[in-house]
Every structure is written in C-alpha cells, then in structure tokens.
Image (cartoon, rainbow, N blue to C red):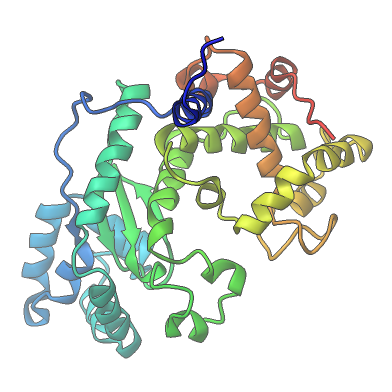
Length: 338
C-alpha cells in the first residue's frame, strides 16, 4: 500500500473535519448590499450647539429621520422632541457630569469604528444571502444613558457604546452591575449582541404554544440564526457564556435533558417554573453553581441544530416560519449521549 507523508495526511483529515463542522461558513463575497456607513449619533448629540437646540434638532431629524424622535422618547426617555421640556432635558442630558464623562470614555475606547463597519458588512451579507427579500436596518452608534446595549427599532440598528467599555469600567461599578453581566460588556460582544437583538425583532415569537418546549425552541431558532450569520464567532460569544460554562453544557447535555424530561417540564406553562431555567443570573441553581444561566436556552439551541442537520431541506427562512415546537423536536431526533 502506498504511504502518504504524515503532513499530507494531517491536512486531509483536517479538511474533512472542517467541511463537516463549517457547513454554514459560506462565501458571501458576491452578495450585493448597500455600502455600510455607521453614523455616530452620540457624537452628533454631544457636540451639538446647545444655544440653538431647535436648529440642531432639525439637522438631526433630517439626518436620522424619525429614529431621532424615537431615540429621545423611548431610548433616553426624555419625553420627546415636541415635549415642552425637550430643550431643557436634552441640555441636561448633554451636560450631565456622568454622561459627559461616559461620552468621553466612549470616544477614547472607540475613536474609530472601522472594525464595526467590516463586521456588520459581513453580518448583513450573510443575512441577505439567507433572507434576500428582507430589509437591512441602518446601523448607528449612540449613547442611551446606560439604558440599552442594542435596539433595533424604526429600521435602525442602534448600538449603545457606553455598554461596551470593558468589565472594569468605573460606570458599571457605580451602577452596581453584577459581574455576570459586566463580563460580556466589551468590544468583542458588540457584534453577537447586535445580531441577536436584530433577530429578535426581525423574527418575533411565533410559536403556537407558550409552554417550556416552545420557549426554548424559539430561542434555539434565534441562536441558530446567529450560527448562520456569524459562522466564525465562537459559541461562547453567541450565547454569552464563559468557556467553562460552555464546557459544563456540553459535558452535561444528557443530564440536563434527562432532568427536564424527569421533571415533566417540556409542556409546562408555569411561567415561574420556566424562568428557573431561562432567566439571567450567575448560574442555574436547579443544577449547580457551575451550571450557566439560561441553560434551557442552550438545550433549545442544540435541538434546533440537530433539527437542521437531520433535515437539510429546511432553510433558515422555513425554520423561522415553523411554529410547532413538538414537530421540530420530533424531526430533530434529539437524543444526547451520556
């Protein structure tokens, strides 16, 4: 038998395993989308001429359209541009010592957002590949007064830069934010956060039931879209887990699924019971302090992944239209091994 050099064998084996694991890592270089240019609303707001608020407001309305009104009314909660106190409130927001300090820190941390232009361009191309007839939101950066990380509203995907200053930011300490949140408030989490926020609004909850299984399958569908849109992003960033937490899930997948089945949780509609396994927090107490929060959502993600693997004719578009969680579970043939 002819023997191949070992380095060739290694390359061949790597290539085989890579093809199996990266079926969503498609070439989108030929996908056509409008050029991505991210406007910086936080700069436009904090550098406006406060002696002429009304004139400046008209400029911002012209540049950002109706989103500027939404930003004032719903995001920074300043009443609205037609509110009698608008001029006073926007000046108060701009001159607030902590807001001004946060703005300066955002400009230091993100003097340029060219990296985000590139990342969003790739994200948008993947979305357009799978959903060619859907609209692409306009991306902007903002400061929301520490209210929101990302919002997708009024055809605008807005990213709150003050929510990505790094876990040791003095502002997060002042706000007494827990470590399990601040651990993910950094630059590398902007893109996966933006993708999830966009998908939640693009594909709102459409399951035909409101039970445990439907809840986790819906989240699994959203997470599968992050797989499709961000094929090169690590799973830990997609779901906001540490590597250790992610390892816990993979090592205990059988035990977690068996627990849900033994407790007859799949078809419960008890919201309080569902929240035990889907809510934010440092861990999922029903299992252990090593078990990450939202562990049921991770399970839903694995079910949907298995469903898509076993049913190659199902496109992401068809997946998001499917409202029968039981059907997805059955066709997934989900049986994690011990």
